[in-house]
Length: 353
Image (cartoon, rainbow, N blue to C red; front, side):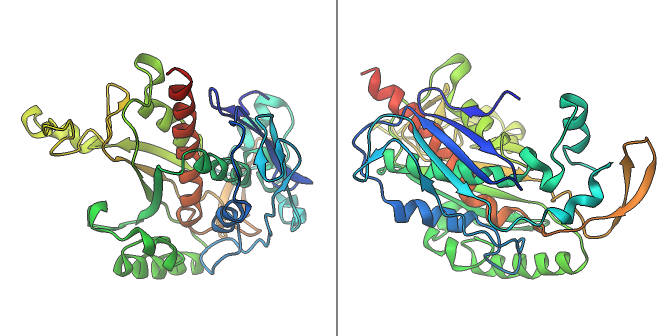
């Protein structure tokens, strides 16, 4: 299986399955001499881990990171950073019923057809549990670029949207509720709705908005390695993501050029920021902001028609521990992938000066 490595200079390779012994990763290209804040890394893991509230999967994992290499006396050495995250709360029997069936909108069928074998326990390699390794790497990437601030938050659940621009939101409130929405009124509605959906044995999707501030001018390369293209790839590589838009996004397609152009101030900043902080694939110093769409979790705790390995359509009910809405736990994953992209381009820019 190829495609397990992300990045150009700052590279992350992840390994492991949802119900295997452990997950883990190797981070290559991290600059030497960075004094790591291990508490900050573990805090990011706490934000992503299962079992943290009543509206997420109740799988109980401590998600404690064990570093194996690339760090000496608390500082990065410039050599590959190896780490593992042990799995301690697998319930593989919850998945024995899907050994010979393919769940709708999962990777079960295509994995088996492509590789001739699949780990059906929790989805194996296709499980969103793989993203735990990304959060570790993203937490380190944030420490490479401490002056750049990355904040993601839930901006919608189903038909419930935050109707305020991000500039009017207090990012310090993101962690004040289990939905991770900085608008308290919207957060309360979202939480109630997710609980209703969970009682029905159903799931619901939503969106995560990410804002990157204090970005220097010049990150990104023109043509194929545009900054927004790499951010798009990073976000679309996350499980359950169905869409990515930055700046004005699809709304910009409805506008006239006279409405959409970001006019300059004398200092090079712009009066508006419909470009989303990126022009010509290169950061322009304004805030970078984008939105990521997540589909409803495909596993339902209710009966559905599924395909079995003999080609029959049968009725089956989902089992196990699953998120009724993935977006609250996706917030730190979006931040982590954004940090990896920004840090990668930051290192490239520094090396080219």
